[in-house]
Length: 171
Image (cartoon, rainbow, N blue to C red; front, side, top):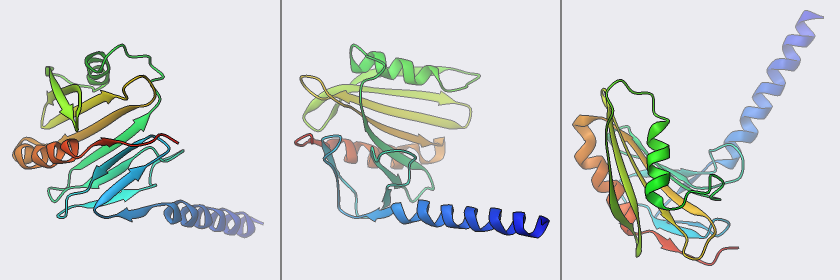
């Protein structure tokens, strides 16, 4: 009986793992998300994967040469942030950190003005960008977690992705 339970657990775990991996797909050149209404350009020298998050697809993970990652996310403004600066301030509060050296500035994602926040926390640096869809709808995040030795090169990729951000028809 123990063997049957073990075999059942093993089969269901391997089957569910197979299904989860089947949804993840590599993305090259351009990532389009009509459900959230945006598109970004994927730089040539990085790898990107979409469909690897739980729930509905909201964005893409961009894996940098440094080993760090940029996440792009489109989602409803369920927290009802009044402006991007408020959203950035709230997102930086969630990071557990001993020394909180945080800055928030105005930034552009494509042609839209938003906000950019930076939090230095020990040996990690969190850079987050946020903009709102004009006239309501989803909000758009770019999130980079990096380390001090790769901050310049990783942030250059983040800014490249941010400059390529475009609003498309929301379906």
